[in-house]
Image 1 (cartoon, helix red, strand yellow):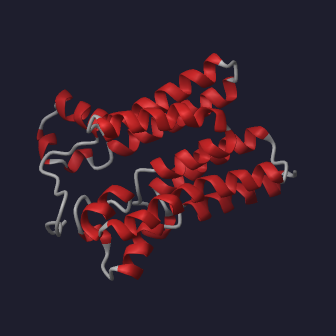
Image 2: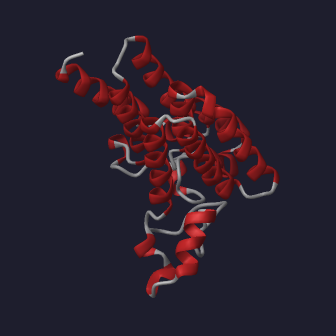
Length: 217
């Protein structure tokens, strides 16, 4: 695979993984802009709370497919492993910062999970198992973070360093996305470790609207 084709593949991954399916599903089925409701996020949780079960049921699997299909297609066409690992990061970045929505997208979790399913299916049980534990304990956000940390540890323990480094990158992206908008947070008028930790561990923002129309931004 030439350098030109590698770059073209990565661009295609970004454009496909960045399609704002949550936004589009809600527009098509309910008829409003999900960014104006709840947290303003285009992911499954905000859609479930503000647009209902139907749109949420569609959004999760579609976002998973956005991560899985481009990476699986790359494997089928013998894309070199280093490029695949780069594509895993690119796909997750695309969902978080999509060009289609002026670089303000979702949390990237479903896409990143699809990516892992494509390039390292053996890590999926660890990832999904901790997700499920977090959901059962009413701590989805720490469950997601724990799942990525455990999957990263498993990858390194198996001796697959490139995969482990890819998982580190995905974990850092998840954390970075949780810090988005920190400077505009009302609680950030002065630096607070509690506020930062609340975001990193619980993806929690002070005064954030969960249900209903958002205040003017």
